[in-house]
Length: 92
Image (tube, rainbow, N blue to C red; front, side, top):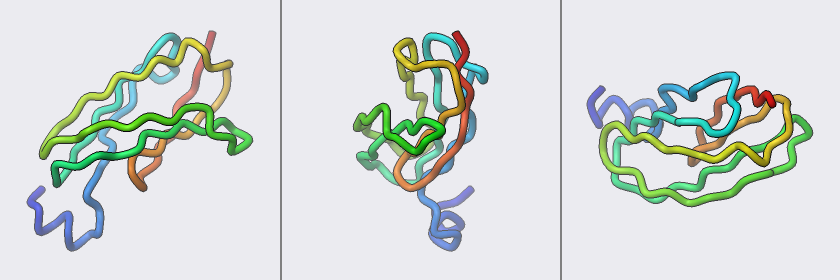
């Protein structure tokens, strides 16, 4: 997609995948970014409590972020990158 299509959609970040899903010790988040930008990475549990907060720098194009999920309990989680969200499952 071109930058103009991102600007038309109002979306500058797109999460292309989170894997593995279900996760065990870590996850890889693949993100496409239309800009070089710093973004917050947040993980929320099923109750809506933020359990992880980190900052990452994204470059234009494809980005792979690795997050440690060892300390998370089993359950459903929501990942927010900038203003974009996607869910994943954590298993022991």
